[in-house]
Image (cartoon, rainbow, N blue to C red):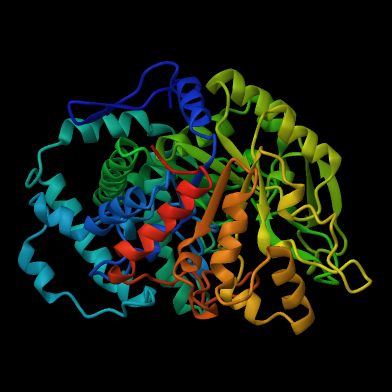
Length: 543
């Protein structure tokens, strides 16, 4: 990518110009004086195709947010997901998830025959059935890509060529990576594996990026690679329309990037020198967190750790490109596990648990300074949950980044039967430079959380909130909205007062997460009216 910095709409096209991020920061900060928003990942939007997409319901959701006086829509990472369907284990830090592409939009543009959609199956309106969704949507999206390549349907090929030129730093490698992955996944499954880890199942020359082998594969899979690039263009074009619609209505998009990347990703395959791999491209160290109160063995996440000396040598070029891409897709960016920019828990790859790891310093200050030099002030939210050291807090403050507070973490006893008044997640301990949440995608819903508390803790929560318990969820929302935190964000599940059945993710589990969906009738005037009343009452009203 070039060193830009603006993304604006001219005659329906996206163009870049200088100074965008500094301007954006000023706009964002000027509206940070008391604002509110909703977390809802696009996967949960209503649609006819089994999973949320960038079709009509995404625009209706924005209308709902506007009617509710909200000014922030927070989403989870938008990348194509890998094993477990988690948006935090993407096969690319730059690409978008093809499942979010609207089939109806493609049909409206003449890239699909509307009769193809007549065979649409009936999907579960409450849960994403990922295997059925893949089986239904992916072939049709590929059909649309082939139609586009053949010169039929919508005529925006100049935009496509510009997109390929602007995103060349990642797009070509990504398209080859996922094409090869699809090919070798079939062989891996025949051998009983879940997928084809590129450094285990692929031919050695391809895994090691032998130039002649890369050229041979690009020739062999030319059609498939072109289709993947077109699919990414579809994603980018549709999401840009959604984002512009939101921005025009005073709503900022708050995106999300995991600090680490998946080992089975185009990022690691295309830039192995940036990660802690040996000469055979096997991981030598992985990320995690040490043993604590919650786990005697800690958490071994398995993500490759960065080879920071190489990032320094290249002036953090890969990171700058990654952050720029994030700001193409969102107005504000949340960095997950922000403390990893100050120090990472480094676990030898051969270790089965996180016990025998060590904290290793990371050059977060150098990285953030370089980003600020390139992009100006950074509209970033630092996920600073968990055990945070003074050094991490100092780093966040130095670069004027907002931190996070979660109400569900606020309630603990003082050891004498009362509430611990020093808990930093209690609203009376906040400062303005925070985003407060009732809960995040990793928490139970607020109703589910409260229901599983013991009677003594329930009493302490109600005493603190000054509530009778008739509507505990909205009392928690009130506590978030009334706090001094500049931004208050609530999962849509809490706004709808849903129980644990609507939980988005349970950390440490696989197979039952990331699949909750909202029904369209839930986004009604009664709900938006109550949200708007709260937003007005506590001076968080958009506009």
